[in-house]
Length: 94
Image 1 (tube, rainbow, N blue to C red):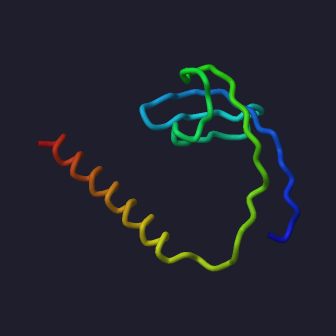
Image 2: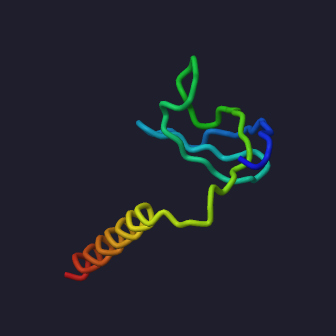
């Protein structure tokens, strides 16, 4: 990494709790984060409205190269989603 690590404390509010995931809105309208539930350290049951905090640093781009494997996976997933929408619309018309 080219730049030194600068740890920043981020805070947010839990806005969704599901069986395997938790959605968090950053305080200060900085965005939204959805993470696996297993990544949260807690002594309590997670509930909507609870405050959470974590340490982050800046995201640094590794290179200008595109990872073709991931790009193909993303395209395949998009194509499947589009096919499902088309099939769903066809069934509604019938």
